[in-house]
Amino acid sequence: MDPQAEGVTPEIPSLSGRMRGSNQSGLRAHNERTVLSLIRQHGELAKAEIARRTGLSAQTASVIMRALEAEELVLRDKPRRGRVGQPSIPMRLNPSGAFTFGLKIGRRSVELVLMDFLGVVRARERLTYAYPDVDLVLDFVRAAQPRVASAIEARLRLRIVGLGVAMPYEMWSWAEEIGAPAERMDAWRRIDIVAELVAITGLPVNLANDATAACAAETVFGTTTSLDYVYFFVGAFVGGGIVMGGDLVTGRTGNAGALGSMPVPRAAREGVAGVRLDGFEQLINFASIHVLEKMIAAEGGDPLVLWKDAGAWDELGAVLDHWLGIAARGLAYAIVSASAVYDFECAVIDGGFPENVRARLVEATQRAMVRLRRQGLTPLDIRAGTMGAGAREIGSASLPFFARFLLDHRGLSAEAA
Image (cartoon, rainbow, N blue to C red; front, top):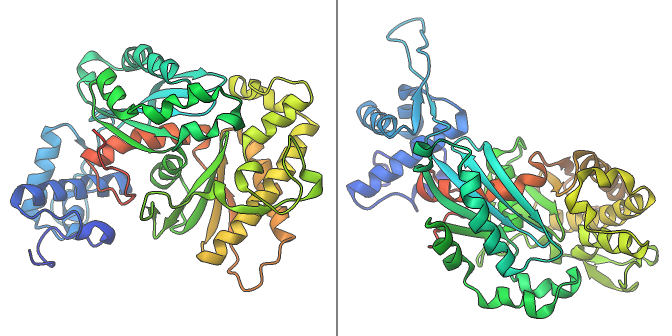
């Protein structure tokens, strides 16, 4: 096919070659994805504007729009009159055109959400636990799925197109850090979680790393405007992602942005809960909530209260202050290291904590950055994320949409089953 043929999408160059079909049905599928992606990106677009942005002929754009409208994936907005010619009719995504489930399997909790085509969560259920037991998680999904689905009318439930899953890779390798029985955690090594979830839900399943999914949510649904940023999600263990040119970069093996493994120098005053005081340690042992859990336990408190009651964070006092200093210093070192590899415009910090804690962590990281040597590096901002604690669930729920309807410039939509 001629690379200049109708259907090339100049605004999404990273996919214009890879996604274009080799036959008419493939081309039509690509063109429909292009149109839906542009409408999602801009909120609403008229047919003439769609044709201009995609390079499609007016006739082809009309055919596509009629097909998408017939499938109830898009809705007509009120006509808008210009100075000359016929009034334009903007088209927008139908919130109820499609739905997905998003499942976040974490080290301290599991959550299932139902999300509509605009990225709005319609319903959710959550279970907190001491550690992620395989049987407990699967039983939760069996029980929660019908309850969460009942948030929409029965006729709309037929439009639930898939289940996206966000979970840490190699879950079994963190048994010691979270105080879980090794034999129970080892069950994650043996189970085919995708096959189990397909059998339970009867839906196609897409799987992604939890921090990568959170970064995807920020990229697709968040309000961060930068096209180049390094992203940190502070959960039970810190992770992250890399965004370049507006696209989430997953890397050769899908492990790009494994920021929790970045080395950070230790300091004597940060020796808590058995962390050694010389040399280097990974970022997960500084900017992770599991470090705060150990500090709380060392003072005789219940660390699991952090996952059960958001208000508990306000009662932590000095122990939270101490942890914020440790986490901020670790994040500052990691940001400097990342900016030495690529000239990011900003670093984005989000996590599984209340907004006021996030704001304090961002401010503390900014102060810690000032004390580090950064000669030869391009200055970058440090900003708060915009998705909050639900970023991983929203990111997971977006996976089936990109697998079926949209151009996936994040590289996440390969269907697992």
